[in-house]
Image (cartoon, rainbow, N blue to C red; front, top):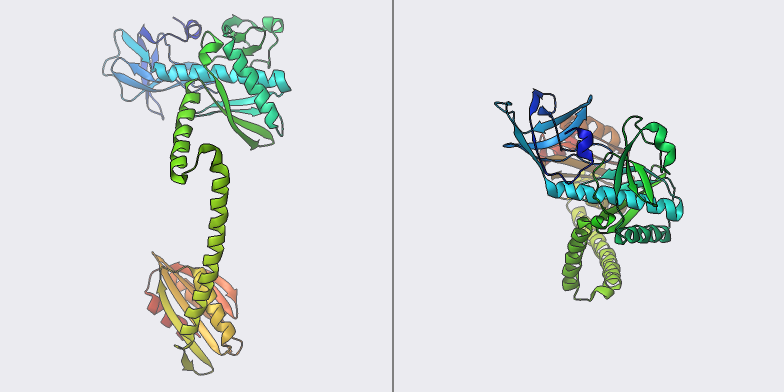
Length: 397
């Protein structure tokens, strides 16, 4: 059986074949088969997986005209007949998704004249990029409805191999990228597309199509959707989450949005109130430090070491003190994990350039910082204790 023959029956699950060669490349060990039913990555569709005798086939790629079947470990003996078996659940999922993409792209083309310029089949969702810069909700609803109508009509999905000279006989959405042995996937009177992927025999086997979301991407619209059993999986997962939330919020489903909005508004009010209280507490803390100042020649020194405090809190404390006591210099150091940070501030009286002093200290902790003559902040590594850093700072004043 040739690869071309395989493409005409995506429902094949097993094959008897022989191994022509076994080699290793940068990706791993692979075998070349006389005949194959494993689909290699291509056309936006992922590869098949499965087994070859007692080895797992973990990847299939077409490289330089060879279909390489990558296996977990090499065979000791490659002679004889080997049975290949694909992971049918994975294959059928890809068949549903790929055929669904054809249907949805054709629906957008027919309903809104939106062209699909790229396609990706992911593990959980699919995406298509539409050749438009924006899309309305009504456009998506119209295309989705048409796509599901085509599915309900159970139209045949036909495949046909043709030559390039025959292309003009078919209303293709875009010109194929190959010129020899062109494979068409056809949904009569709806979609004609050059494609080498796997598809079911009927649109009904796609099951359903559901658009999930869309966003702007490089000047186009990237649309997310699911098909077939993935629709049920999405519904099951989201229904479970919704059910859990209704229990937590003690509210019916239809009232969840206004209740969540009220909770978020209340949370913002509480955060603002807490921020105000925090400012008051920091001011009290700063006032307490003022009383711990040590008189020096030309200024009053206030210094303190902290653990697990944000540098923003230290900034507010230092700024409060410097504003209230113009004769002070404030030196605050904090250690958070393996990081040392410092804040230095002064009132208007001391004749000290804090920026120059701090710049001599930062290299000692493999750090950096910046600021101005009256206020400096920065940090580095905890290569010394907080108390040692404070003393070095004091000596640099």
